[in-house]
Image (tube, rainbow, N blue to C red; front, side, top):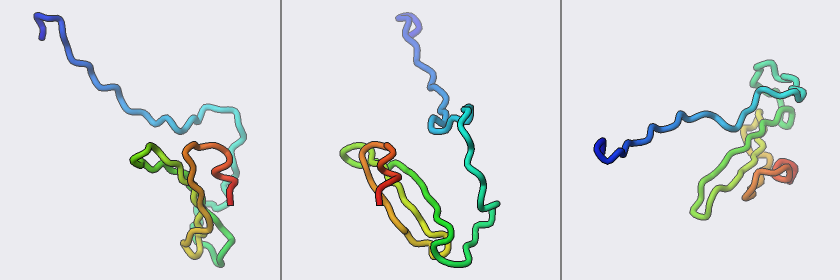
Length: 89
């Protein structure tokens, strides 16, 4: 390979590309104060967005969980991660 001038490529380091902390937008207030226990249902809801690999490509899932009962309150799935996925019921 050296005689032919061929060499392998080094792998690029992996970096998180979903979070940009260098912005001027307002930051949401921490209302829980690390108190992760709810006294009754429907007082505290948790939300998460995630990607699911499928045979046809990636699928976006938005889910809302009740902290007290640990049950799903609602969820939505879409092919793209746009505002509508978080606003659907």
